[in-house]
Length: 92
Image 1 (cartoon, rainbow, N blue to C red):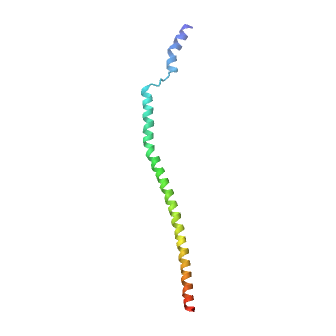
Image 2 (cartoon, rainbow, N blue to C red):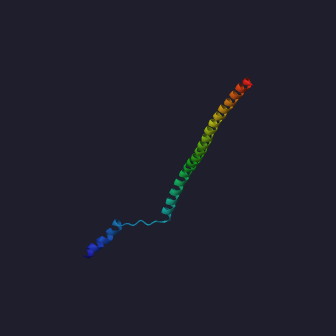
Image 3 (cartoon, one colour):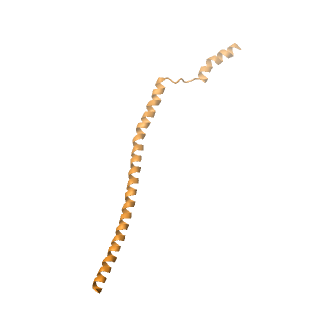
């Protein structure tokens, strides 16, 4: 029975090897995380800037379209007034 316990004591560290987390492992993980952040930060920043610029462009485009429509309506009313003035001038 003692031989079996001795054999299990010798094999146990191999089967149940526990990896201890030391300072070098922590620094390695910290380095990997910082590297990922450095790579992703510019991409996120640029996407955010593109989104805000496109939102501003869409707002300006809608204002431009509205002003074009308003200009068309004003031109139409000016033509009507001009036509009425020409007809009224010829009648009197």
